[in-house]
Image (cartoon, rainbow, N blue to C red; front, side, top):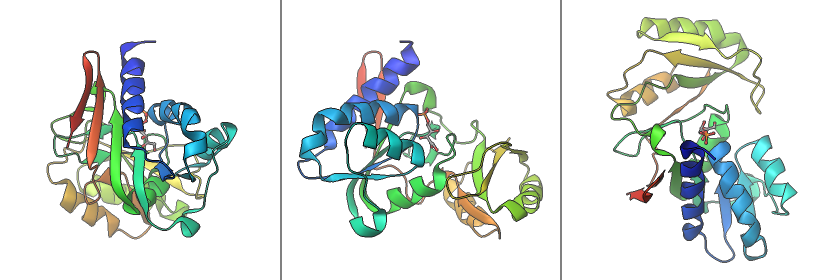
Length: 219
Ligand code: 5RP
């Protein structure tokens, strides 16, 4: 296993410390979360179940015998565990590299504590080196892309990807996101935008960074 994957796994295992007996846990999406899901097997009989942020995570959770519950039936959650594409020192995130940003943002919003699990390659001082994913209604894709050019970005359509919600994704390159709160609000206001992959308003409460010398906890 290379150092990136061992960092992902170390962070994922550290997130098990946030679980409590009888919990209904929110589960994100991606390769880091997959380590967390695999480790949840040892918690199967002690959890009420999980609320999932994607069809992929749902299938993986079910495969190890964890019941997946619809968020509409679950109410607010005590804990959400998910990865990220970038993390800044204030625990604000870029997410959506795996295309699951909309459901991830909903489950994060419905959770009292968001624990983000990453390897050190995800740490940045200023968000925006990773292209910002934006989920759009298909007919609005070119319109939203032109608006992104208007703010100095370089939008690229993630072709061949339809999200779990039947939408499309554009990845916006070249943004230096010095004010993520304002940018998130501004982009949310563009007609046709479903979800912006900036998690600044609902940022992580805890970031666990799996480093070679141990797991660092940012709070
Ligand atoms: C999926 C996400 C993921 O959390 C993000 O892409 C990180 O993925 P990985 O854990 O595979 O590095 O936001 O939409």
